[in-house]
Image 1 (cartoon, rainbow, N blue to C red):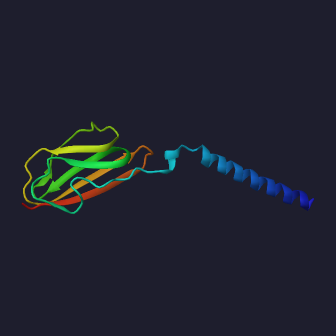
Image 2 (cartoon, helix red, strand yellow; image 1 turned 120 degrees about the vertical axis):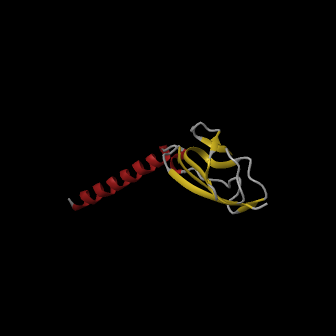
Length: 128
């Protein structure tokens, strides 16, 4: 009787292992990968001699950017976005007002195709 129980336990472990392996192999390739941010334009920590004509964020996979803010010495700088809130791998936005000398920060938040929420900041300085 004891030998039968040991055999049943071994069979149950084997079946569990086979099921787990099957589930891993059947999962879509992107199911385990999150989108990642690439270096921005302007780059984090960069000092510019003139205000940027465009702010660009790039990602390794589609991201729906839900928050995009640019703040500086005079407060928030309005941005004109080109994505229409659709998932993109490259987001460009144009500053909608003049930017004075000083430190600026881009703050963003988005959601990848897998539902993973990401946030980030990019700091740069304008010093002609």
